[in-house]
Image (cartoon, rainbow, N blue to C red; front, side, top):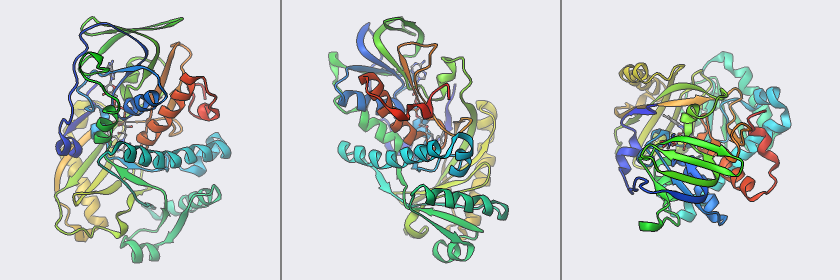
Length: 401
Ligand SMILES: Cc1cc2nc3c(=O)[nH]c(=O)nc-3n(C[C@H](O)[C@H](O)[C@H](O)COP(=O)(O)OP(=O)(O)OC[C@H]3O[C@@H](n4cnc5c(N)ncnc54)[C@H](O)[C@@H]3O)c2cc1C
């Protein structure tokens, strides 16, 4: 599967900060992690901190899956609004899912600080109605979030114009939110207690081509014919999990992102809040620490890479028009443009934990617009499961939910 195309901004900005060897020998370990994107990196970080010996293996050069394409907005707001999710799975469970995402943002901030990684900044999040017809749902969503204890403020059209200079029929302003650089964070996490040489525990460019799930462990075979024997396996394979699992858990789509040229002045919009809207597909916007503006969206319902990539020029034109309409004074000039595969689930929630048909393994599948916060939740839950600790939230994201 080709997960992305074009020039993802952070890949250009940060390049290849660290390199890793291919697997060229057989290994036995406690836990094997397939995938070294943000999900695999967070799982490894938590396992190592819990004293669990693990090795990480990736088919690509590290980070070059979806993680390098991520626009790295961190929101507690799941793709399915809270009031709708409550109708789908019940109020308590829906609120708990939102709370876990909210806590995940702060925990990611703490991890970034602990690792001395290059970027994490708290930002408020502004969710505006794209059309008048969306106002009713937006107000319902505001009430649901307020009742659940989230710090939110409703802005009528007039207040939205006055405070943020946005012409829209209304918006919810949430206190909780942040932005990061998932690509560099992944690299920083993988450096945590990473040993080089003979003790090396991270391998890239080593596709796993066969996996046997036995009663007492798993045996992985790589393309080069080497074997990894482990007691437990973590699938942190991102959207390519569809190659390993017979259950349909995700709809694959395509999304597009554009980053502007650098501006001299830093007066984009008030407080540089994260911005997204109620359109379907929705638009999402943020700023970068080096004075750029990013807009993403214009998703398509297919993931065929040929069709997806052919649309990049047209999508760029549309996204530039979109942002110039919202902020005409920006005079947005695109510099980096890319597209990536994106996945959504039936309820906007990820799949985390065990899948009964594949014993001795756990899945860390942070699908959706909040993939990164879900990855953090997955890392914590899987570590608990491996340590034999009870985690009551696991049923929210179970395969048989
Ligand atoms: C354009 C775009 C914008 C996004 N914006 C946001 C955002 O603003 N906020 C947010 O939270 N999320 C966002 N996401 C989603 C987020 O980027 C993903 O959820 C996240 O990067 C997934 O990380 P991952 O580690 O699960 O997957 P990946 O980064 O894809 O890593 C999985 C790894 O598994 C490896 N792998 C797969 N199969 C095998 C195999 N057989 N053998 C060995 N290795 C294998 C792959 O090579 C890959 O490197 C966005 C996604 C895209 C595409």
